[in-house]
Amino acid sequence: MPTLSDLVVRHTSLDAADLEWLHSLVSDWQLLADLSFADLILWAPLLPPAAEAGGGEGRAENGHGERYGGGWIAIAQMRPTTGPTVYHDDVVGTVVARGERHLIDTAWNERRICREGDPDWSTGVPVREETIPVRRMLPDGQGRFLAIIQRSTNLSSARTPSRLELTYLQSASDLAQMVAEGRFPFSGDEPILVRSPRVGDGLLRLDRGGRVTYASPNALSAYRRLGLHADLVGAELGRVTATLCYSDEPINEDLMIVASGRAAKETEVESGGTIVQLRAIPLIVGGGRIGALVLIRDVTELRRRERELMTKDATIREIHHRVKNNLQTVAALLRLQARRLQVPEGREALEEAVRRVGSIAIVHETLSHAPEEFVDFDDIADRVIAMAGEVSAAESAVTPRRVGAFGVLPSLIATPLAMALTELLQNALQHGRPRRLQVVVERVGPGDDRLNVTVWDDGQGVPEGFDLDSSTSLGLQIVRTLVEGELSGKLSIGPREGGGTEVMLSIPLPAG
Image 1 (cartoon, one colour):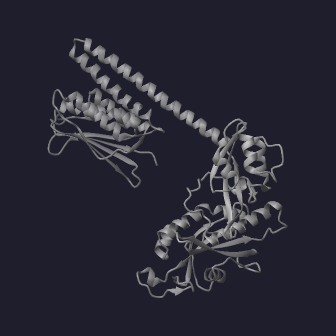
Image 2: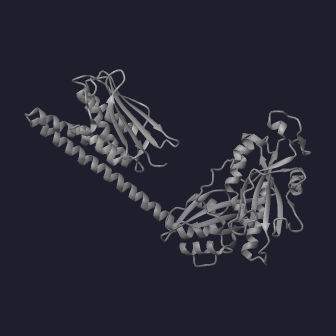
Image 3: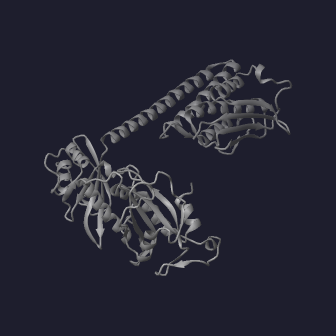
């Protein structure tokens, strides 16, 4: 399905600023749908085929100096969570000609909200239609009309509305008027978070003075958990909230701004172990502030789980840090033991063990700084390569090089891969005696779901009749166990074209 941006760019004359305004509207219009108990469809004026192809002929004017193709395209859709939907199928991308939807045409031409008299039965259920022009305020104070919102309410379960529903509908009417006047969404504000309170979480309606005129049951319950024992209706929300949460502390200024409904902001308050999130939506109609909506959500459990995850994450990083320290201690002990040995073979074996332990320590050191169990393996590979180069510098002065990027890898892959890379580099430097040594990395597959690593050198090459299955080299057996056993990959070793040795690893990566 094409995105809103795709449809706007391909089929309309709206510019980048218009598109940004529509994105802000669509990111927050669930609020309008829920308050209205209605489906919302956003219709944009459609350019004629000639204009879409690059020509300018065939456009119609709407009487306000703005030209369009005389038709409409649906670029976004929203269903309510508070009532039954009208449109079970997606309508985004649907095109209608001028004259097929008279309410849309009227709202566009007359720049006003249009309401239908009798319910429409064309969908099989009684539906009340309404259209709202979408206006963007320009820096000079003038307005530019961009699109039309079609609001469709399913009347199949119509009944005498409760006070809650009446408050919802009145608030929806005020918001619709703000959309038509270019005052919603709020320009210049930070985007609303996905976890912001929704209408069903709890709603308060405030008057101009910040006093509560209506409190939904969920909102009242949230304040009861904060410690409120009196009636919330008629109270000044900012003062009540500050008394509950900041009796012995300086009052948070953001709280007073949000709780009074003076600005479109969010804040959180805590009292008695309960954490409540508040979001204020000022209602500005006809150029003046008539009140505000405050959405409320009890996020106590959510924040508790987030704290548990942060504690767990910190614990895991501390474990990696301690493992790294222990491995470095083991490596230091092995290094001391190697210096005391007089037998060259024994000293060499211990030095190889030091390098193997060191490669694992590098992975754990990286994980101790990572926020998750994923690491940027390029940094690890470069440190492993540098470590191998330092060891060989006295003998051959070969500096290994990396070509390509490993990218971010899970720790379950990073640890065995670092060990395998250490063994292959050390084996090439010790036995191949090359002038050049490279590690070539490539991610392949439709979703970069496979990692191919080639380690090649221009040294002496593999011995004649070499067979990996019958090789007695401890290093190669370690690499084979790591690649085929732990990483479920494939390993091949053979002569390189032009001389030297080529080792190829092919490792599957987890999805995502």
